[in-house]
Image (cartoon, rainbow, N blue to C red; front, side, top):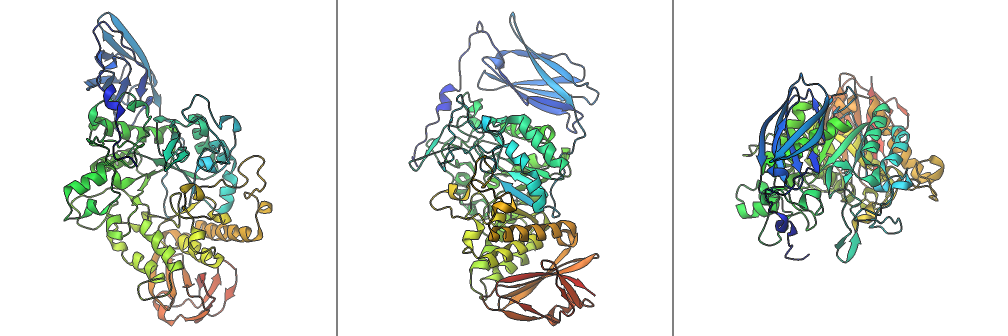
Length: 623
């Protein structure tokens, strides 16, 4: 990585315009708004040559121009509008005048529809995380475009785009329904019109979606806005929710507004290129140096992802309004936030509050990759006396991910192995509501779960059992159900391979039982059976959790409510074991029989349980 990264945007910052020059408007964001929003105010960004030199007015019943804001760059104006609840949907004329010149820009206000949106995800859901470019290709005609900065598509190159799209994903909705999934989370679908980047001598595409170049357009290679809207509608019709992946911290370095930066403070600027340290400890450290904290928060994530300054009110408004626009326009149900801990946290609170004010049921959960529950709790509603109080409803549970993997990898010990799993949950008091945390075993940035546990199917089943029966909102990375595996070393592309069968002409189709091996079908059927049971039994998502200290690698916990009791008993050792159950009488009192959820076997006595090595059993307790 170069120590100095030049910011070419500054040279374009202050174009000079004479009074005689003609002004014009080439962009309005948000691209439209709605009548009847709970917050009647909206700040509209106007861009074009000399757009900031125009005197603006609006003559439309119910729409009031409160203030015109101009900034350093005369190519921008920010119009503060209010839209009365009595305003009629229609096309508003934004009128700009400069001497004898008049510029008229049409901008639409729409009626809100009653289609499902912002339904939220809860502990009753099972989220499926997929990377659209690597999941399924339903429309080969949109695989590449010659007029985009990256015109390549090559499935033989692990670093290029592979052509997966939203139409292909829509065609696989029945597959997800069959698996027991209730919500789909895609890595970002917004436009990434980025050139290939040179990373360590390898040219790579932004197929992952995290380098936005336009917040108001879904990438054409995924099908565009119409395909995304259609996907959400089809998912809702099938009973699936949709989670949108949001990025506030940074944008791609070819984003349209970086070609003509509105003002210096739009970005976090440094005298020389400064990367974040990725050291989250400085954020919560009560003894930490402010300079360390500043570099962590304001340093750039990587050189080609410029860091947005969310303490700038215009940046903050732009991002917040885009979030609301996305929910209202596309109808998504929940909001996953990338690199949450690198954002300005007061801004995040403001953004979360704005979304929740409009959509009280929406769930918001961010990515804060930390290794302890105290730091993790900082980024969600918590019970710790931090000076800053987060209002984020949930967060991704990285600490539990690490603990569950350690429980399957490490030998039994006083503090290691399954004790890590137990101890992590034992600290849940730091969260106001731990059931809102999103749990997982791996993701698109980590080694795949099956490889982490040594390609061991018994451990795989035990891990999936924990994921689908403990507290929280479970999320599974695409392909885990068919035993996709690999390590990130040497590159992330190794854990982002195409789903076999997602492309016309694939030799294998893992979307079908006939295309899967016997072992893959065993894994798929295991996930399907447990996920379906979880979906249909309230006790596994709304029931209380009680766990018992592990002993000799044996770990037992219960989910229980008025409707019933489920016991999960795990033997994490490599030897069979007998588990006497008298110790658990406070949860089993009066329940003397059981049905094995996975095998259907009836147990007429549960005074003791025979647990094979590396096995977790899920028992529905009966009188």
